[in-house]
Each structure stands twice: as C-alpha cells, then as structure tokens.
Image 1 (cartoon, helix red, strand yellow):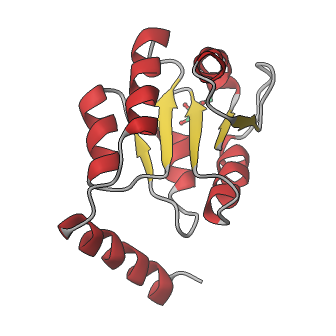
Image 2 (cartoon, rainbow, N blue to C red):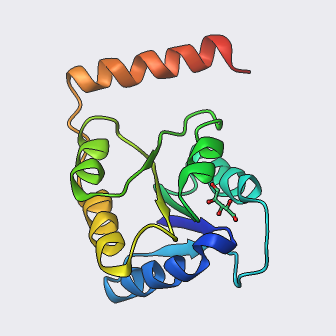
Image 3 (cartoon, rainbow, N blue to C red):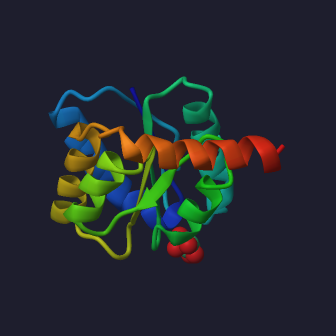
Length: 148
Ligand code: RB5
C-alpha cells in the first residue's frame, strides 16, 4: 500500500499520479491536499512519513512545487530515505542502491509523462542489498545514535 501526499504546488501532479495508480490497480491512500489552497509542505511530509516509518505503508510519494522542500522535511523523519527524482535513472538506482522508501517529485518541474514513468520505476524496482545494505545500515546506526 502506497501513501501519497502533496502541498498546493504538487496538487495537480498528484492528481496525475493518482490516475496512474488507479489504472495500474496499485493500492494507495491519498493524504491530500485536495485543492490548491496554500499549505505548509513540512506538515504533509511529516504526516505521510510517520505512516511509512511506522510500517503502515510500504512506500510513500510526496510532491511539492520543486520536490525539494518536501524531501528535506521527509528526510528528518527517522527511518525515512526520501529521494527527489527528476529522471528515470535516479528513480531506478535510488531503489536498487538506497532502498528509498519515499519518492519526491516536483509538480512545477515535471510533466505527467515523465513523472508517471519515474513512479512506475520507483514502485517496481527492488533493493539490491549486499554492499548497499551495509551503507543503509550506517545511516540507520547514525540515526539510532544521534537522533532521538
Ligand atoms: C510552495 O510555494 C513551494 O515553496 C513548495 O511547493 C516547494 O516547492 C518547496 O520546496
């Protein structure tokens, strides 16, 4: 199950991604927002990321205007590895190598075609493990030791 959320800058692109998820029969929960009224992107990032970090959702998708603010906020949540992707190669390798659990995109930087392809790759690529697991474990160990 996928958790998806956005701010006002990501609202239109979220609607495109929802259409893709529906078409592909990928189960999701839409955490909003539901229109283009101005909101604060950290609130949505924390709401969605807390759910993913708790294990209530397998992965999350977050969209703001650039994808930058919402990814910065998302990566403050313990256990979250959020990747801002604007190309297919990054989407593939952030799953293969980083086991990213949140995909961030920019509603004002990406069109529907590319963002759909990025989402498809992100959701269907498995983590490679091995030496990459060692690196993920270093991030988790740092979080455990330094972030309460
Ligand atoms: C909102 O205007 C905009 O700042 C936000 O969507 C995002 O781009 C922040 O990084």
